[in-house]
Image (cartoon, rainbow, N blue to C red; front, side):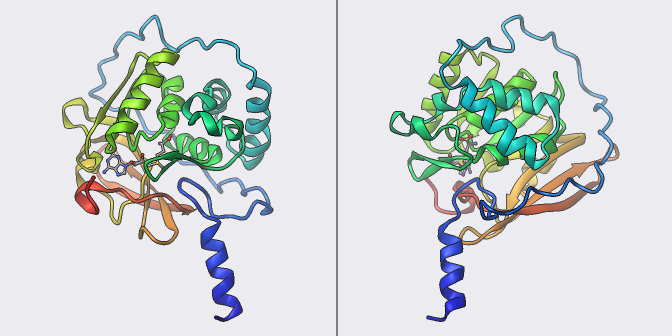
Length: 275
Ligand SMILES: C[S@@+](CC[C@H](N)C(=O)[O-])C[C@H]1O[C@@H](n2cnc3c(N)ncnc32)[C@H](O)[C@@H]1O
């Protein structure tokens, strides 16, 4: 086997779900050249009152300093700037979404296995994808791939109206339990195939998919409001994928932009091996 093939295999082996494939030693990501202006609020939004028990108040925990250090070192320094996203990343107790045996790894900037062949995504990727959604309080957001529930909790620190779908029943149940324990009363989550979205709850201001699809699922595009934003990894299951940002203008016209390479587990169900 040639040296280049060995290097490529080592590189792929280092990758894991929900992770950016840049080596640890790479310099901080350059700031994006120019941010698009925030979309106008969709016209059909009927403002719903913000519930009194939102956002949840968390008990002080012994990981707060480590969590804050992780946000400063691994997220802010890599140019995630949106204050609500940084606040959310400092607020969510990531250790509570991990299997007990992995709690010590909760504040390292990398994905961690959560069982059932799945992972909780790398904190930097969670923050960066959330920032791209330009989420505001009161917006409605759909997540495909609840997994541990961590990404949904980050979204739920920014807006109460979070919907999340998970295809693996035990993970769907476990994340529901954690949401309850931590007081995320406004997150609506269910077991099912997220390829088809959540039609009865839509349309959504934002959609985030945390598993890699071979193409952009048309039902999700349909369930995105005019002015909405969707972020998802698109590409083959065995290699790196492109993180795609899809925007829909007020006339319903969509545009896509590739942001950076990522490595996620595949979207299963209709598209691949069913559960
Ligand atoms: C990278 S993990 C998710 C990480 C998660 N967002 C978190 O914060 O822990 C991807 C998840 O997508 C789920 N998944 C894969 N295909 C799916 C589908 N068609 N519908 C819903 N969930 C799916 C997997 O079971 C897995 O839990």
